[in-house]
Length: 592
Image (cartoon, rainbow, N blue to C red; front, side, top):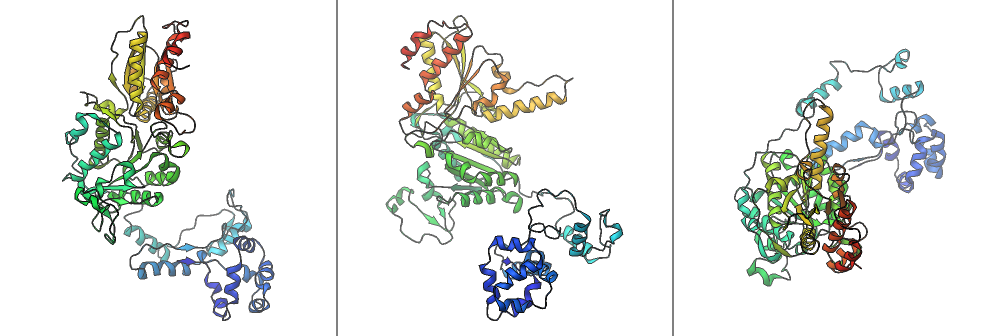
């Protein structure tokens, strides 16, 4: 509903039998209306009404002050109320937006003059104009003190305000959550992920396996809302189409081209009771669905669990503002960045190769960001998100990268669950003992863990360097914990000082710390200041390129040979590797 003109215009519009005034209103542009608001009534008479003699004749009985007082609809309580009343009583429950036209700085004495940005106080004449415009009963002799005006206790205004506050639940804003705590499936439910596989599989496939288990779960399966902001087959999610169906209020209205796959339940099946929201390339619409599902625990007292899947490189750049709106609304849910990594999505070039989404999502205060490399890590992280958000009822978001590179996955080692969730754990100790202190700590995440493990073997076999491999699932969580410890220590200088989790793990180790990622170096640099003399990040800063993974990783310096070289250079700098030996190392590693 548009509320453009105030009641003062009604007599003029009623007399506009030839449509001349309406046409004049339509042809005037915004800049002209701003000029009319900021100028005397005589200017409006000459330039707005004066364009047509007939219009000028219709306002000849109005003086300049009366012309200037012709209000826009947003400043007329009667018009605003009429629009609101129509929306409530005649819209049949449909969502209705009221667009009310207003003048910036209205009733302040400097309407339309772009001064309200920096106006700190009112002059006497401006106060007087505001008082008169709003009909506030304050006499002139008290106006300079700008007294606080409170309507009488028996006034209609106070009675209305109190009644509305009662209806809204009180005078202080408060979110009352009626949604129950959900029963979350145990980690053992995802045994397929925990056992590992010798066959090639991606972390995207590992997530799909987790999602399939959740959809079939009798406790929370019907609460899951898969939201696909692209073609689901790009992420291997097409089995969902036949299994649970794509939601469509009209049902299936055509025979899909892949209907021959119906016996395998992998065809494009739309239904009125479908569970998947297939939003296509409409990313704002998809994230709006995410916000609606993610806040339903508060708005409807009903838990729904949104799982939004899209290209990792396209989520934050396209709908970053709406991600913040979700966080500020205390939404819950999972955001899954498919085809992640600057070098893992080979051949896609500048547009789709993602090296920064982790950094983007790490700026959102309520978002926990993870970069998993193994199938069991995916299961542990998703299950923990369900526990936090829907059992402990914590208001937070989860962002998880998903890669499309296929490789074998190990079984989950004992005792690593806490480290996965906190952001770091020792995955593989060195196969040999350090020779004369030649020892390094290699941190890897995502698919780059494969390169880190290969670098560990190169260092051991060719150079006798003992390298321990750590899986860094979340630099953001490591940094958050370290900052929390730092803040507590600042506030309690006399108490025993807290030690950040990452320092408790790496602080007692020896040698350089080489942190490798398929994202920009700023990601591992989140923890670098806690190891100022030992830390070296390797990442994929720059634009993506169209080539094979091996070529891309060599270009960015995140392949196994480049990691081994960086380790030896750092060891040389602390006297643990011969500088003379470096002369032949590059050739031996094939880096020349």
